[in-house]
Image 1 (tube, one colour):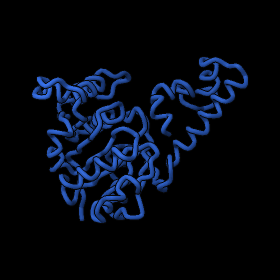
Image 2 (tube, helix red, strand yellow; image 1 turned 90 degrees about the vertical axis):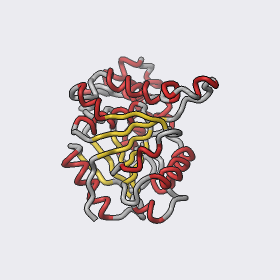
Image 3 (tube, one colour; image 1 turned 45 degrees about the vertical axis):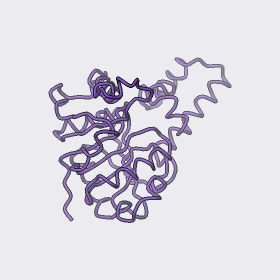
Image 4 (cartoon, one colour; image 1 turned 60 degrees about the vertical axis):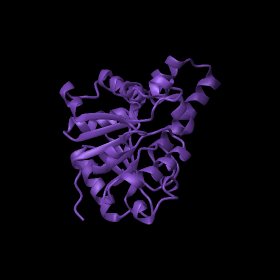
Length: 259
């Protein structure tokens, strides 16, 4: 089968979901960006589309305003349409590729895959941007046909600027899809693609976890403050200026905890 990606669905409008949406829009790919309906809406708000799309709109707005800029030019934002997973999941029915970028917990991801299997095209590629959950576990309750089209695509924050893309197939992923995503990631997305084994945290986050924990341990033992640690563990030793604690702030304490 010949695969082609002209339209992408992204579920999860947080920092990574919005950043991936922007990166795709920058290269001219149409994007459908969805997030959940906010909980605890009033009865009046439950009937209000604007209130129901509050999370996705907020994520979109933050993506547009982010610095460094996610978008190459503001007109690229027109390629991104918004919706929520309760009312608009059918918008994914004509997407060539659907990316899950939701909370870093296994059970919500598994529940989402069960819903996606009902709506996506039988030839659509589906991936997870999880930073470390074993990929095969996310679809362990899905059909063999769905598993064959599923793999991990782990982008790094911010997606526009960080070159690494980890591609994580499972034992069930069709080899043709793996080959296509490696080529698409390299030639179209402009990434340095590394194919990883489906082991917890893959490759990069294993290094990050060890380096980060060592940095914190050393800081405590040597009574170093945050600026001192970041000045010693950034460009001075050939690492990005995010260093140790700035990287934790960028990734988010909740995500780093799960990693």
